[in-house]
Length: 342
Image (cartoon, rainbow, N blue to C red; front, side, top):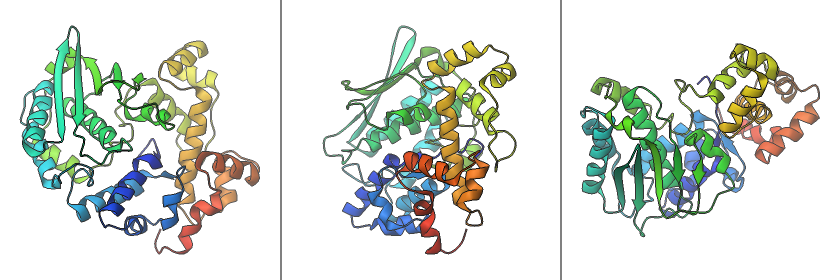
């Protein structure tokens, strides 16, 4: 994965807590991903996409529930895949979203989708029943993100959301929504919904069943990370900052990046601000994500990782890493001694 986004613990730990309540011990899922059980008590931990994929796929397999046991009644994983196979037969994005809503109505009483248009905009809203176990909002976030990404994949082009609404207070991890939705987010609203141009509904479905089977095989990889086809300024800047050497960070200046993108430094700053970030924030996020990736390689010492990230002192890197994750680099990788394999 070229962008190396890591995943906030919020999108993993609630799934494991729910599994625990259903009689599936979290240790089994963490161990499968090469992680220690005590991570359940580390709310600031971040997971690599591979770790996220291993945990969620095993959760799906063990629970046979597409919604991780959080809906009032289980929805078998095969049912969700059948939804996708029915939807891919529709001729355009609007048809795909309508078919999804129909399938959900048939499969469960707890989850409802509603698609409507108002002027130049379309609004896709989501409601869940009171019996769902979604006290930490992760099911609703998962469903909105999954549907948005699936619709973009169907069209072969990223759908640019204009706004997203959430029916709960702004969470402490709200910055992660930049990766999930990449649009202004409104909290404490009366509904869960995403808004986009109504013209998107007529975009043609360019996918085949063969392509669908390929993407389903890799589910849910990609749901919580930006797709590489994304053309936003944030993704373009990330690609430049990451450079060609995946093991060594050597950031160019903002002025150099702006020149590469054929714009002035001031314009670049404004464009990044419009996408809810900054040049400095992006550099720190990249350092964090690459640090987590490199620390998973036991052949590299903490000093090696610090040097690869541009830190001349390991102690400076260790302080920064603890600020990102709540753990020192050594504590983060300490489980490696207990887990066999790379």
